[in-house]
Image (cartoon, rainbow, N blue to C red; front, side):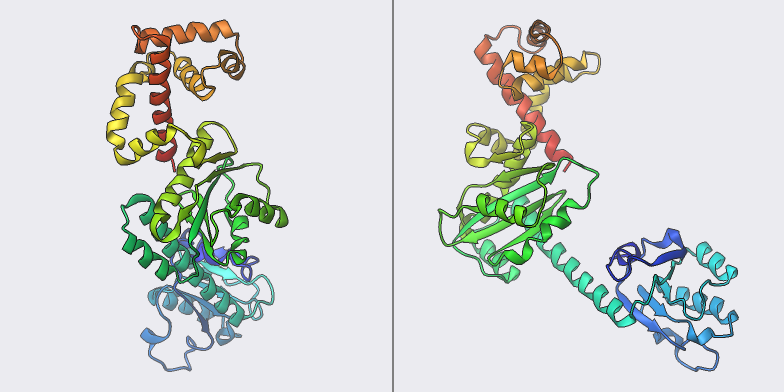
Length: 386
């Protein structure tokens, strides 16, 4: 965590940054208390007073009636590698101007308590947050392995042991993303479901979130239960996109379940649908596996077939029309509605597209090839921005 994360804790949310705004990125590894260490009357070994990368809490009692001590204290904290000073305004409501100017020059954050926050509670909350973040990072690392590596059965068993949670025979996975890219709160609301997961886990992967649940029965209705939980916690799904895996054996097929949920959610976004189940993807599964195993080959195919549409000199409406044509499964009327134009306009654009990419192909071959190329193009584009 860093100083900015520290200021987002429930206990510190009312703190004010009075100096050193440019130093909020500094890491925080510890929280310590400053009492009288910088009083000239105290003889101590300065190098061992505070550990580096600490937020130092103080009531500034050592400088009571001696404001000149404050500048020296801030200077020493900076030399000792402290990340920030947070003071309780009981002795000093405001610090001397020269202290604030010096802290600004050194990019050293000085924080003022918002009220009567207790030092001990701040320390405990900070340490609890740090442990949670470490565990979240651990889970995200595991998810990255499951998504991006060829994990063996033995490695899967080892991973499950490391997570140190009970896992049942069958696993069900949902991958979730928001359509509101600027909304950063949606993940936190879904983490509220974590206490309900007795045999599963919630973790992040890139910009999406995974919910894994295991159960003794293949007939377990995971999606129904998840929707009940979302309703119970009043979590809105209006801006969320869900991808669901099939049922898999936990200790053998966990990576498959994870990838299925992820790619199902990607396909849901491509089709502008709120939900997609991997089992309903039909031949799109082949495109997904082809892209996953050899993205360079697939993009070479996309560029060779759609290259004329992707060139800047050509009308951008042509590529957009091709995408909508595939997403709408060749329905000219629906494509026209989506582009706010007459169906004849769409037919004219499609004839231009065919002249550019496949002048000699019949209708069936043309749709088959452009559908594959466009879906691979969209698949690559969606994954690339994750």
